[in-house]
Image (cartoon, rainbow, N blue to C red; front, side, top):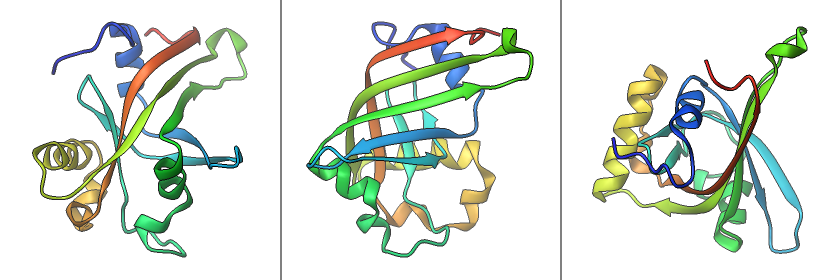
Length: 148
């Protein structure tokens, strides 16, 4: 794994990897934000999310997040910890540039492997047939107890 220390520190990458879900923020061409939870995996350079087969009202490539990213590739990702003991609070906010990896590329296959390794539920889903969202971090901010 080749880490990108210029954007995320080793502690920030480790914090990200300890989490199973993040929130993805995208914006359409009119500036209207959209926020969704997502599963993700990373390779130390980029963060990947599958367009999976969980029930949706539209085809995966027509999801609002995908339409937004086609119009505006800027994205933000948030992972956080909440506890009633506020000394345990923490978050990592990542801003980046998003793109869609198409099936049949080496990076797409690597992303699918990473996602299936982290989430066994993907073994039963044909995620290799759909594009994968790729986010390359451009900046990151962390606060609180984000280091283990």
